[in-house]
Length: 168
Image (cartoon, rainbow, N blue to C red):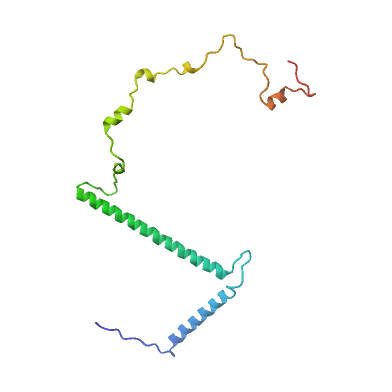
């Protein structure tokens, strides 16, 4: 195994000094940006920027944990599915990818039992006269056109300009 020789950067070299200057400038910019972060509140906000930042970090952490739990649940379901497939293969049942036998969870029923419960409809029962249930009107009945109005609009239409009702 060959070891790489370590390169020692001379602290007085131009590259080291430039790197240190860039680091210092970056730190100053962060200090300026963060000034007042812990005690100043933006207009219309009830929390400081530091409080908002901490809540955001906490929310991201909770979301990450939820994703991990969801991933673990998915892995558990996939493991169960693989075990179920392995058991079916041991029993000699054919399992195709993507297909699932929905009848596995339904208890078996005898076809003889189902035939006894369902009566067969005859052709006579299909032709039912729906008018048999409607009572017949009396022969002397006539629609009364002089009936009382059902709504206020109809009543107002019959009231004269002077406020009197028409004579009937």
